[in-house]
Image (cartoon, rainbow, N blue to C red; front, side, top):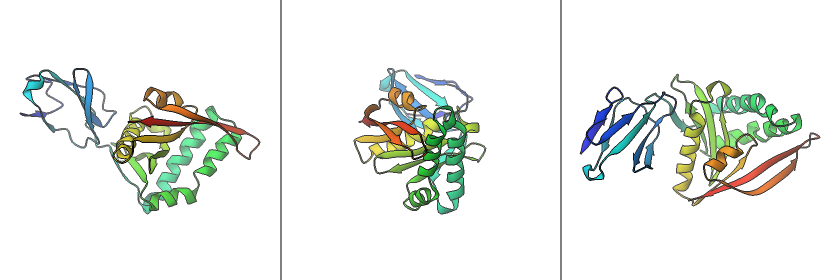
Amino acid sequence: MIFPIIPEISQFPNMKLNKAPPTSPMITLIYQGKELFMILPVITLVFYLQIDPALGNIVIKHIGGNRMNIRIAEEKDFNTVKDITQDTIKSAYPKYYPQGAVLFFSEYHSDENIIRDIRAGNVYLLISEEDIPAGTVTISDNEIDRLFVLPSFQNRGYGKALLDMAEEKIYSSYDVIKLFASLQAKNMYLKRGYKEVEYLTIDTGHNDYLCTSVMERHI
């Protein structure tokens, strides 16, 4: 049986459409309290979902309906990826790290490293519903890196959308995800099921030390 899922309509037989603020670009099918799958990105206000009536009551949680999308970055996007990365580091990291560590992060995400990853097809851009590049993530084999959302676009679900996409892509080929967690992001990763496998103290070369966690999550 196929039901049309339209934001203005809230009730269907054996179904319920929960509305939420348009901040996250996904819908989630929940059955007996378990999330069965997500669709990302949502680019239209009308969806069609095939439902087996034998499943009984199903909750459809529709979040968003905006035109947010995630795409592979091209070489022409280099300055955009660089600006998102460097602006986020300069804005957010001084709240958690000494100046030497902030400089280390900035140098680590150098022009050379960014363009290398773009040319390898490893960099993704998130475009907001306002058609503005708002976030980025880099996926290298089974490692997530350079996950940044511009401060003015934070708290809108974009970081989660980028992470969801990166995890799904990696899990299609690997059974473990690796990443380096910054201080401000560590608790978020722990809540998502990541485990700390190593704690590093790095000499930044700027009279400061950087403390970071190597984290992994298995299927």
